[in-house]
Image (cartoon, rainbow, N blue to C red):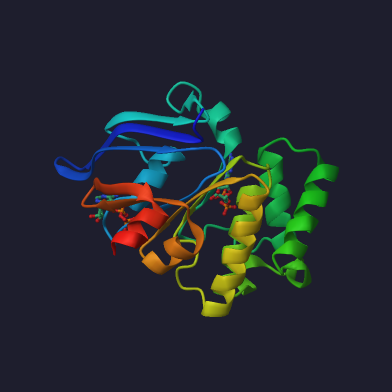
Length: 226
Ligand code: ADP
Ligand code: ADP
């Protein structure tokens, strides 16, 4: 089954603003996929619907074959999401944020601690493990959000503009980390408005504009045509 299958997805905000006009997408397991588009195109709305923060108007979303309308808890096990906005408890310590998240998934404490420590070290946050999240830099917060999204070992990681507002060095370290977990088998979908970011990382790409998919192809064939 595909990691993600979206059929004819639509979203109308208010009475008549069509943010998504019936988009369809299919992302295979193991892919590194970019959803590229300008601000306002509908990227965050799409992600919001997949993780059930936004109600869709029409269409169907399946994560690893599981329809989110039929069994969202089952779909959620496959899914890790890194939203654009930081949404931590600002007073909670870095390591505790990961342990709290693990608690939501019923992960045993010992396993949770092992994973948390692994990600803290891997993502350069080990020195900050006892620091409240509000004291972290923007790049560190972003990496903590990635660690939090991975704590239940999802098969599919979706990131909304993962390097927005992050300096160039930090961007490279986030890119390298994502490449590493993709090489280890995690499917990755990211949204971006930088073609450069999609080109550096992704094998396949869809371009969204005004709520419609205007291109859906391999990165190689897109670059060949530019
Ligand atoms: P992107 O992530 O590509 O920048 P969004 O999905 O955030 O795009 O937004 C798509 C369109 O929907 C934009 O025109 C945005 O202004 C509008 N929009 C997003 N959220 C809401 C909302 N809660 N109410 C009304 N309009 C919204
Ligand atoms: P606080 O109100 O203390 O800041 P929240 O309850 O808003 O903390 O949770 C912070 C983040 O943890 C949320 O944005 C969400 O990503 C995640 N989260 C919260 N509740 C759940 C839950 N039931 N299952 C999975 N993740 C959750």
